[in-house]
Length: 117
Ligand SMILES: N=c1c2ncn([C@@H]3O[C@H](COP(=O)(O)OP(=O)(O)OP(=O)(O)O)[C@@H](O)[C@H]3O)c2ncn1[C@@H]1O[C@H](COP(=O)(O)O)[C@@H](O)[C@H]1O
Image (cartoon, rainbow, N blue to C red; front, top):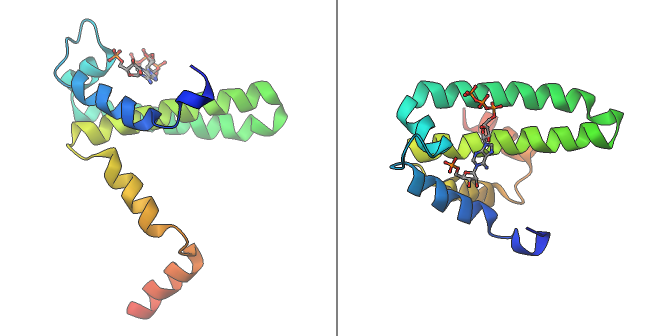
């Protein structure tokens, strides 16, 4: 698939993940994760987060290491989407939260929190 078809990949992937919740665990990795339950899904998110951090440490070394970081980050995002789907939370809620924060400086937001206390 080329980049021109990737604009709505999150949307399409989320649809597939929701469909697979009730799929056959013998034929679907996602269905198998749901069957194993939340603890297994969280274990995978933790594992992929650690692998992403380790890959990031080497990413300055060259293009192969950068490609490895991209791959690990994709694993992390994918398993995070499975986690949200398992808990009936739409990926759209995360996109909405990022949109809400858009253009709000992280430093200003933090300062406003301190003032509220
Ligand atoms: N994007 C992904 C995706 N990314 C990673 N993975 C799988 O995630 C797993 C993570 O890698 P690991 O090396 O940790 O896996 P593992 O050693 O087999 O895992 P464990 O046995 O240790 O739990 C691998 O099996 C990958 O194939 C994915 N599996 C599925 N998808 C998407 O989900 C859709 C539905 O997949 P199925 O449910 O399998 O049909 C696919 O069409 C894809 O679009």
